Image 1 (cartoon, rainbow, N blue to C red):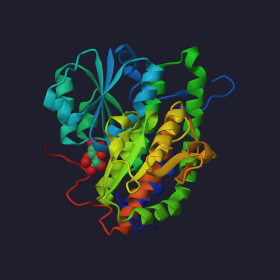
Image 2: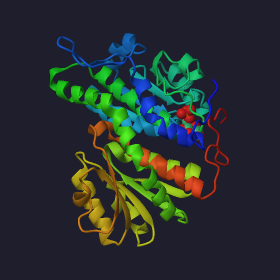
Image 3: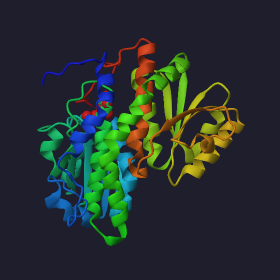
Image 4: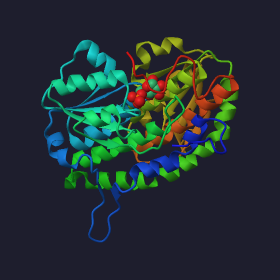
Length: 374
Ligand code: G6P
């Protein structure tokens, strides 16, 4: 596949900006909008023969590394909500190190952009030996993980070249949200919620197109942060994963220390770091955790924290009343899809920070796109 950068300077930049299109491709042919007699629904050909087994499983275990792990973490709440099945998370290397329990009654879901990551592959062989149903979610048709799992879903995000994963991340979340809809079935009690999610999926490429307009704003913010040593990112609920992923992007390409923090853990350590110098991004878009995030912002503000607050459009005053924080307003979407929108400004921030700091965007030092050795 001959891929060039087109009008962009770097692959990472191109891949960030093509997310409206990659998301559209990911969903193509898989969502039914409904009509006079058809209900809104999801069709995942690669899973359909195994849905009954998945629904009967005692537990669903997500397994992955790096960005793929974060994508699974972002999708975990909606899979739990719609399926009612406990969903646990495993970093692939850690599962293998511990030889953690995996049972025949488990569905083990392997998430990997490349489908070739050595740790994820080793965890897959381990889960196969233990008799679990193994599902692969990859971006690479014919990859080891795609070939060795019982069934799966291709994310169809298109070839990703930048070492830092961007468009694969958002497509992975969308695929797992569709998987949640498929596994959840069509109980009357969840029908309204399911339809709202499906409508939200249809509209998601447009919302991502909108949020990409923050490019210049993120460049200005990067300019402001260019000489910092460290950046904290606070998130919770659906956006705990966004905090981890935003921090990972800044760390891996901009070579700046950055940490994603579960806001609910703030008082158990991170608060000690807060002063007037350390920049802190707080993700506080509108969902069931919003009032808790408002309180986190107030507490950080009381300690003179240097805050950058990401909130839903129109929520700036509610998110940081009377404070001097910098605000990033993003379009609002269905809560479980909000991580797809929220990660984009953080991807842009990491990209611009990297360029301004003069580092290699597409091939950060010491890192590889696909880690095929242990
Ligand atoms: C490497 C890449 C990351 C990626 C991780 C997992 O560390 O640099 O961008 O998230 O591997 O890769 P996978 O192909 O399994 O998603």
